Length: 447
Ligand SMILES: *Cc1c(COP(=O)(O)O)cnc(C)c1O
Ligand code: SF4
Image (tube, rainbow, N blue to C red; front, side, top):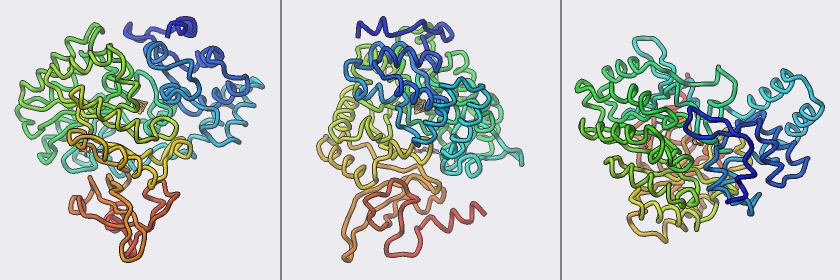
C-alpha cells in the first residue's frame, strides 16, 4: 500500500519498537480514508467510549485502503460510526463538536461504558481466587486445570480489535482493570494448587512486553517445585498485528530463546494465537514469524471469535484453517462474540454461527478439525453449539460444555429450544427440561 506512506500521520514511538497510532491521530486517518465529516464525528464519538489504537504495520501492510469501509482489517481496528446506539453517538458527537469540557465528554463516555457490560461472565467476582483469605487481583481461576495470569505490563495490545471483549482493560477506568506484577503470588498459589496443569498468561497482549519483563514472569514458573505446571500458554495477537516481534525486534531472538528454555525445562510453551482473518497471515513477515516461533519448539494454537462484517462466512474460516495447518499451526477454537461492548453490532446469531462453522468444517481435511466451536465463554463455562436437530418433533439446539466450573458437566449433551435470533447463552431456553444442567451449580456459586 504505497499511498499509505502519506496516509500515516506523524507517529509515536512505543519503546522504540513500533509506531503506534491512537485517538489523537484518528481524525487525520479518517480524513485520508475518505470518510465524510459526519462519519468522522461519529467515529470519534465511538472512540471516546471504546479504545482505539493501531500501528504502522496494520495501516501499511494489512489494510487495503482501496476497499474501505468493507476491508475486514479496517473493520477489525477502526471504530465504525454505527457501532454503538445511535442516540449515544449523537449525544457525544454533539459534545465533541460544541467543544464541551473534557470532563463532560468523559462522564458521558463513562455512562455509556457502564451499559456495555464491561466484565462479562461474572469474571470479576466468580473467578477471583484467594490465597489464605487474601484476594489475588490479576489472577483468574475458573476451570480446575488452568489459571489465568494478567501481567501488569501486558495489558495493552499492538492494535485494538473493535470487538474486543477485554476492552475495559484499555480505557481509563482503573476500577475495571485486572492486573498484577506479583509473580510471587502466582507461584504461591500454584504451590497450593497441584491440580493446575496450565498457566495462561493473558491480557491485553503479553507479547507487548519485552523479553526481559516476560522472562521475569515465566522463569519462576519453571522451578522444579512447580513440576505440575505442564504447559505455559501465552494469549497473543502479535503474530497477526506485529510479527516483527519474532523477527526483527531487538529482543526477538531472546524471546525465542526463552521459549526454548521452557521446553528444556520439560514444559510445553504454546502461543494461543488470535487470528481473525486470513489476511493477517498473508505477508512474508507474518509467515517468517510463524516459522521462527515453530523453530523454537513452541506450538501455535489458533482461535478467534466469529464477527459480523469481519469474518462471518464459511469461506473465510475454511481458508483460515487451511492456511494455518499449511503453516504448521493447530486450529483450536471458534468463539461466539461475547456479551459485552458492541455485541449488538458484531453478534452473529447462534443458528447462523453453527451453520458457518459446519460449512467450513465440512470442507477441510482432518488436520483442520482440531478446531471446536462455535463456543460461548459464558458464566458456567464454555458452551459449544454442536448443531440443530429435531428431537421428538421439536427443533432444538444440541449443546455441549467444553469447559465447566463443574467438571462433571463436561462433554454431556443437552438441549435448548431453537431460536433463530438468539446470540448468547442467556437468550436460550432449555428444551425437554425446566433448567439447564449448569443452572443449580451456578446459582449456588452466586449465592
Ligand atoms: C477458555 C478459558 C480457559 C482455557 O480453556 P481451554 O479449554 O483449556 O483452552 C481458561 N480459563 C478461562 C476463564 C477461559 O475462558
Ligand atoms: S488483540 Fe485481543 S486483547 Fe487485544 S484488542 Fe484484540 S481481542 Fe482485545
